[in-house]
Image 1 (tube, one colour):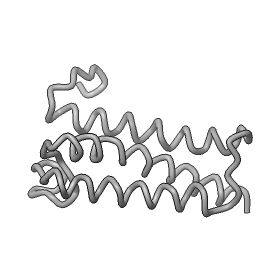
Image 2: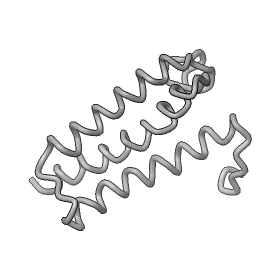
Image 3: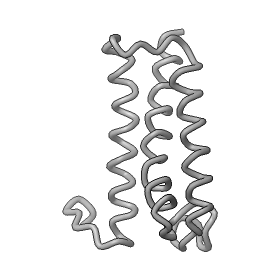
Image 4: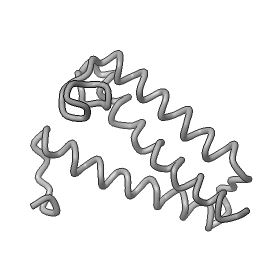
Length: 109
């Protein structure tokens, strides 16, 4: 089922995009929002928790992209599916985290 493979690759892109802010902030030693903070997604979680959450997202993204179907970097459909998921999540994260970190986002008004 090609469409199920592409759907998995879209969600793989989502998880790969979500890896970045958590790993960057966690490795840098900064507390950052996570689903485990209080309130979820708004409060700050420890840098260690963010590293763990980033690594979990990395593993899930890996499983969805490289273990579901036959992902090929030379296949335009595979790259578009992954890219759509990555781009949508990156935009959503920029809007969500921009509210807390002074991001100047004209789309959020």
